[in-house]
Structure formats: structure tokens, C-alpha cells
Length: 593
Image 1 (spheres, helix red, strand yellow):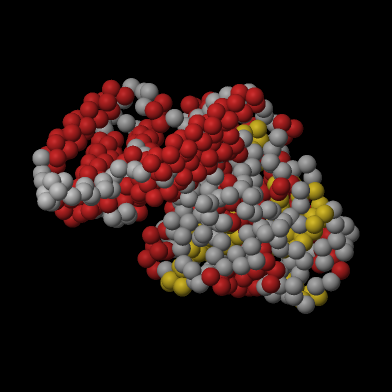
Image 2 (tube, rainbow, N blue to C red):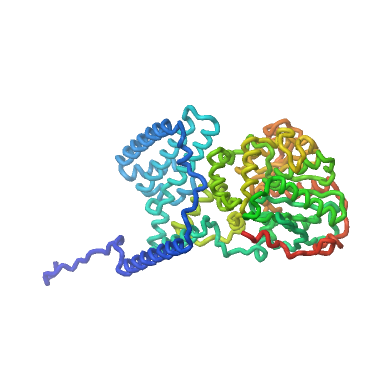
């Protein structure tokens, strides 16, 4: 007290009390969010969009005789989790935080320091980790399940634990809370805009869809479309060397994706690199399915491969071609070669290279879960127009790596409101293609479910029974060590089913990065070994590791098959031979949705 009798002390400002300006700004954010949601609802009502069908519903996978046992085990798990939570909350905060920090898992979802340093968030993370482990353990130890049912249950449990991670909720993610406070809600508003945009287009965005344009800053290797059918366009790329190999190369990419994964940009383009090595390169660009393709089946894709091979042979007046088949197109190429062999026409193909392709689907991995009656019935429902919307296939593949390809972007795009990264690979990943429904079902049933391709004469293509053991074409078989779509052990089975000379190469990384690895990048590694090894284990045990890209090893193998060269002139120039240019590469088909 002063001599005037007044208390001169003043209260310190409360750092947690928002200022009037902050409160006004938050009110503005809430108002704009409400308007955004109202605009979205009005647009959906105007367009008459119904709820998007769920591609897969893990909960429905539990609707079987094992449900009760699963529920009982889950109840025990949650009781143990509750007991653990209670025991931790009884500890003093500093000790609880220290305990959490001691055994923090190396999980990038919980990289924020608050997950170990803040007692509340440390407790949430520890409890989540325990309950997730208990759920997965319970699923793996349940009795009375066959192998297929257990795999589905484990996948459902894994998907559930990833979806229920506390990092996926704004209220339990310290980074999201901090960002929201720092931006006074603008990050949440931006994230809401991203989410509503994705809901409207029916697809999770990984990049800004306007960041790339096919033919402008992606798929830019110079060339011409020199042939087309109702199913595909054939692109011929312009040579960049004075002389070229006399044997040209025809590449068959998978029709479940766009071909330009092999021509992303000049620095990453396998196409551009192959041209620089002196190869005359042709690329097949498949048409995205529509209602007019409802009767397309596997025979049509095999006929298209034969047509492309014959077109190139005729154009360049050569007896044979080198060929590459990527993923499903590689599987189909094996059937094509078996048919040609049965017809006495095997010499049309000088060599075959398989990029992460399977012919024996016994060990095909998680994708085998999507071939039971329940899933096939769902596919039929989703394909009422005669084709399967590519967004459903994209969702399936994303779900195989849900933590990285779904929830990571839910947090970054929606909760944190981050700007989209300008990443060409992710743009390609979201540039989906539609699939002919009849063919897709046939493929899943005959190959994934019934594994008929490796049974001699079980399948006929274009009226010819096929047997893979008749394929004597020299084969280069590339597999990815971390491939989750075409698992290494499954790709290795090509070594068991082909009769000709075979070279097996194991690349570092997975289904995409294991293939698209240009030498200039200096990334990853590859292994070569005994191509007569009886098993994959024997091959790996004796394999030699080489740092960097495997592409130079492949072009060396190509040269071993036939090293003859010819001047790059006449029909070797796109549009200068009998096949005139229809349009510039990359053509129309790759741009059609």
C-alpha cells in the first residue's frame, strides 16, 4: 500500500486468455468454416451426389463365426488397457513423462517432442501403443481361423489401429494444436478446404492437382503417336544418338496406372535414359476404360501386345523386338509369350524384361485378401456401368500402406493445413485409370484366387492353351526388396516357371522406387547372384551388392542379347516411316479420365 492508500500492484496477463483481437479472429474463422461447409452441402445437393461406396469395410470382415471370440478377446484387451491407464495416472506427472520417454517407439507419427516431454500426451501415446499391440496380438493368436481369415483379420486390426491413432485427431495431436494457436485457426480452415475439395472429387489428394500437366512438365520425352486402336496408343520416341540398336524396345506398362511412371521428368525418365543408350523405344499407352469397354477381357490385352509387337516389327523391318512388361502387364506378357511359343512364333520377341511382375500368385501378399466372394460382390456393385472407377483401385493400393499414404496426408493436409508438395510421383499415383469390369474380375479370379496361370493348359488365350514352361525367351527378372504389391518371394517364382535363360536382379526399395532409380540419383542398390540358385534364399545368401541404379546392368544385358547397331534415320525417326504421326507424345489416351 502507498501513502495514498491505493494498491499499486497489477495482475500479470494470463497467457492462456485470448485477446479480444484473437477472439474476433477465431469467430471469423468459425464463420468462414460454416460457410464452406454450407457451400459444399449445397453443391452436393445440386449435383445429386450420393454417399461414395466404401471400397472395403474392415468391420464387415468381422461378420463371421469368429466374431464372438474376437469380441471377447478385445474386451480383455481393453480391460488391460484401462488398468494400465489407471496405473499411469496414479504416478506424478514428471515420472509419468520420464517413463514414456524411456521406451518411446521410433515412429515418425510421434516425432513431436510433446509426445515424450508433455505428461498428458506421453500418457496418450503410451496407452495407444499398448492397446494397439494388444489388439494385433489378440488377432494373431486367435484360435479357429484359417490362413486367409487370419490375414484379413490382421489387416483389419492393423487398419483400425492406424485409423485410431491419436495423431489423427486435432484434439489429441500437440502439433496440430500448436499450429492452430499460432495461426489463430487459419491452419484448420485451410485443412477444411482441402478436405471438402477431396470429398467433392471423391479422392484423397497427395499433391496439388494443378501443379502438373501431362505433356507440359511431366511425360515430356519427345515422340509421336504412330499407331492407335480402341484399347491403346503406340508412342515412338525420337532418337538422340547417331546410331541405335537394330533391335527396338517395346514397353508394356500396367493399365491400372498411367504409363508415364517411366517418364516422369527428364531426370527420372527410364524412357529418356533408354533412348540415350541407343534404343529405339516404343511405349504402349492404354486407354482408361469407359462403358464402351464393358466386354473387354484378358484376351484383348494379349491381342494388343501382339499387335504392338507386330506393328513395330513391320515398321522397322526387323524380325524381333526386346520387350518390357511392368507389373500386371508383365504377367500378361508372360501369357503372350506362352501363346507365341505354342504357335511357333516365339522368335518375334528377342528378350523379355519383367519389372516386378508375378505369374505364380501363391505368395502374392496382402492383395490376395481382395479376392473372396464378399469383395468380388462389392466389385460387381461398384462396376454397374461396365467399368471400375480407378479411384477404388487407388484406395485399395493406398490402404496397403495406410499409415504412409492415407493418414499421413489426413494429418498434413487436413489437420495441419500444409501446402501440397510439388511431387511428380505422388501426382502420378493419384492420376487414376478405370478398369474394364469383366476383365478385372477375370484377372482376380483366374490368377489371384485360383492361380491358374502356372497350371499347364489350364488357361487358353486367343484360342490357344498356354504353358509357361514353353517360354524359352531370354528373361531379365527384376524384383524390389521392399515391394508390397508384387512381393519378392512371389516375383522369384518366375525363375521356377520359365524354361529359357534367366537373369534375376534384386533391387533396393519397392514397387516404384525399385524400378524408377536413375543412375544420376545415386540412390539405393541392387544385388546379383547365382541365376541357377534353387531357392530365393540361396540366391540372396550368395548375392553381391552393388550401390546405385541397376539400369546400367540391364542395358549391358540387352547388349549381350544383340549388340548390332544401325543409323538412326528413316523409320527410326517417329513419323518418317510407313506409320505417320497421329499426334505428339504423350498422346490423348493418357489424358483421358
